[in-house]
Image (cartoon, rainbow, N blue to C red; front, side, top):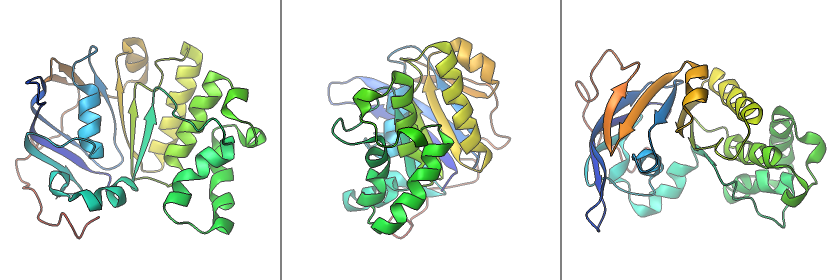
Length: 242
């Protein structure tokens, strides 16, 4: 489920604010892209729509050809099991160790207890925190907490990784480390979409950039050869696929 396509997506909230207007963009499986824009440009709305936390007012959002806007509420948790999400605020459970925070989505998914350690520890090692698996969040630095959040996002081996301003609270060196981790996961086939307004970081990464301004797509540095929606229509497999 690593391919994503927005087809003329508009999101208007009840107060009349239009967060996105007629946005079309396609992302191939295994690609890496930034969603760039000022505060309020629509970056977080873009990710929330893709996560299924909000529904578009108009348009289709296809994930592996399936229109997720048509998913029933009871299907959304299953769909989200395929997605990793990294937030600017780590949202770690303060009374749980690093290990337990990372293990949480596996327990929610019903993984057997004896298998959880085999999955969690290699991921903690990947983010350089295996030696701190028993530490509580308060005992970790800001950068370490962010890496716990990343480990939790990828421990389910998602095909799609979404990050909303993941480096906003980090210094440049830590931000670069976080981006290297995203590149590592992207290198094994994970589709990565990062919302950010850090121009220097985005320029240094030399990846595709989709720029939003007041909810409108104004630049796509590397658009697909086929215009979004040109040869695909929303699938009716909304229930069976997830």
